Amino acid sequence: SIHKDLEEKIARFHQREDAILYASCFDANAGIFEALLTPEDAVLSDELNHASIIDGIRLCKANKYRYKHMDMQDLEAKLQDAQKHRLRLVATDGAFSMDGDIAPLREICQLAQKYNALVFIDECHATGFLGPNGRGTDELLGVMDKVTIINSTLGKALGGAAGGYTTGPKPLIDLLRQRSRPYLFSNSLPPAVVGCASKALDLLMDSNAIAQSMAAKTQRFRSKMTAAGFTISGKDHPICPVMLGDARLAAVMAEDMLNRGIYVIGFSYPVVPKGKARIRVQISAVHSDEDIDRCVEAFTEVGRKHGALP
Ligand code: PLP
Image (cartoon, rainbow, N blue to C red; front, side, top):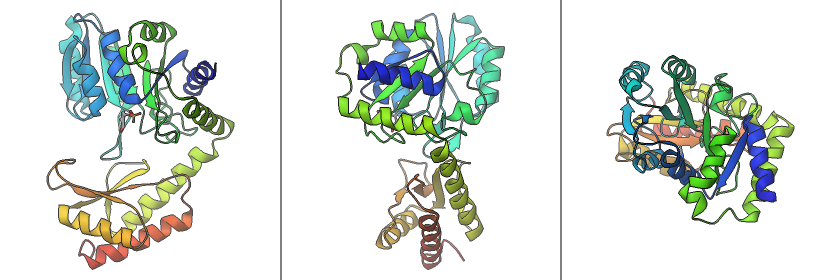
């Protein structure tokens, strides 16, 4: 019963009809495309979608289209080409974790309407903190009634370190219960994870204070770092990639930050393209304004020391 209660709560949180739990969002993504799409259908996927979406799509027999990252002209061209198929599904991360950029969901939903397609979003990097009430990218961009299917995780902002789900129309969820292989052929979530996720959703639904404080802290970090002379990729997202370019510079600066008690991660090729090395900073609800200011000061010192700032 605690699993059923959580599924009902997830659906209520996202304002959808029903939800189904998985052991992880990787499983939710692995299970949905094969269950939903046939060789008569088409799936259109952003080229930078998460590996689990790519793997899920690999498992299905639908016709596959890959559009350029957040490129609406390319998506439209692919949608036109896909008109010959029975059903079209556009699949995108709501927010992309490497650059902290947010999918243009308004435009995607307009195109989906024009070309009679369904929209699927992966909200792992949005659930719990994006949008005025933390509902996610669809709330942030005002398209909650236009996105058909949401997959997300209980393991990131909701804090449980495991668990995932699909939420959407009831007939879809009923279908997944009968056909989705990672749901049928694997254990469900441990009760402690269910209890943790359920409490996290209660906190979010009781008040929007956490979501609002995340937006304010994100804005504080991004604007202070920009004023200090750094380039922060993406927009309005608490994943804040400090762009440095050089792989060695990102590594030594991250190490120096750690020496100052600040844990931030340097990323370089092959995780990100060559010449686009960065330090990825993640703002959390438990950071205070003082923590954020101390982080900016440390970045400024370390950046000057290594020549990233004049
Ligand atoms: N989708 C995206 C966009 C992710 O970033 C991740 C995790 O890194 C997943 C899916 C997988 O989520 P989980 O850890 O719940 O399997």
